[in-house]
Figure 1: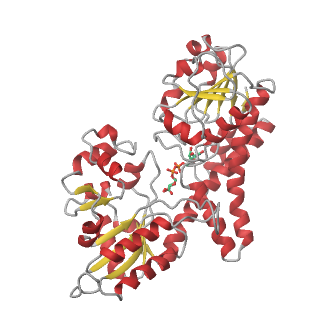
Figure 2: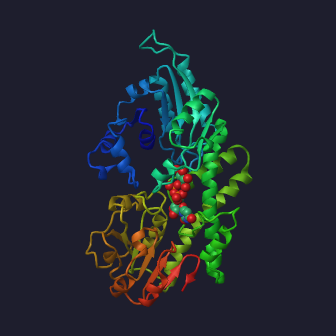
Figure 3: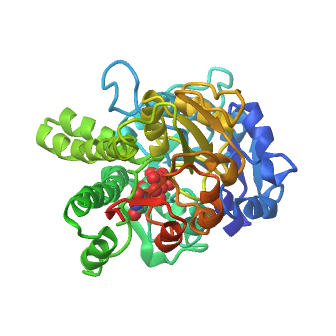
Length: 456
Ligand code: UGA
């Protein structure tokens, strides 16, 4: 919404939320305190806030005056009930649709921006049309509102959100009402070339979003499965992915082996696709996509177990340093981060884990791991505990192993000669992102393991 406001100064954009604290954080003078860390976002907010971008909790009046409403709420995986563990929980989407139905006036275009299961628009339309046929009880003279529903899924990735929005590969608009489709296309045409604005039917648009993520995640599971084969055979994943990726039909992007994909989208969306496939009586299709998630879980477990194996089969009472807790670089998001399951597995084995991340807070880690940090003397070793530290030096001091789990730039340039002086001997560096300079690590006398290459 901030980028739309930035690129379309003639349009007023109001972001509304029930959560007052969150809205006041978005309105904060201190741009470092914005609720989301995203490179470049603070400048966009700085340019637009108060000009034509507003953050507010006045939901009713904002909906009433809006020509277009973007539903952009979260759709987490259901934890209980029908479809638990797979289906998306649409309660927030439904709540939004009800509010729009209640407060809208005149003709309102309702845009699905959240990632939704295919055919969600039916539910939204049904909720909206119930209101279109009921007069406003408080205002008998008012005309019934009318609605058009569009699907306009978001393809941005965290960490590169602003660039992805400013220079998208494509914009997708699904809808049945040509006037509504063109009204939304006109907004994007302020900065997006018209030939990359794709118009489809509603269901294609909804399904394309889910399957685009599934295809991306599938590439990661595919390359991670090959990483294990490389380690077993002496092939080198960097060479193999280059050799595969230079086939223009395959392409070089999204072929980095790693600790498995994380983030709020891939796992949730694939599980939802599995659920939908089964729901529509296509269990083979569901099973096919389930394997992408299964392999991802396996990759994380495999790495944790490998660390234990290399450390003489036990990490109990040993200090292990985890560098990087976010699910990828340039974000403070830890949702579904591979670091969570890897850390939990090692804590379970009795290790004392020190965690460093340039952007993640200790409270987020506590939340993600479901247990509080230890407040003991930081250097003394306690079994099965963890502590967040503010420097890499502190994290690795006294450690038996360092695990690099996020590809932050600062981890690419570490001075291993200095760091190794304070580590135990023998000690290990496990590079799950393939970013560390091997020669430096080796000349510092450390053992080295890299995903898709194995032990060096
Ligand atoms: C993903 C998609 O890339 C976006 O197109 C989509 O809009 C978004 O989900 C969404 O549905 O909202 P995001 O989850 O922010 O974006 O992050 P990605 O850059 O896709 O990374 C996902 C995970 O895959 C990360 O853990 C990353 O480290 C991992 N990854 C990515 C690899 O392990 N190897 C790669 O080559 C690429």
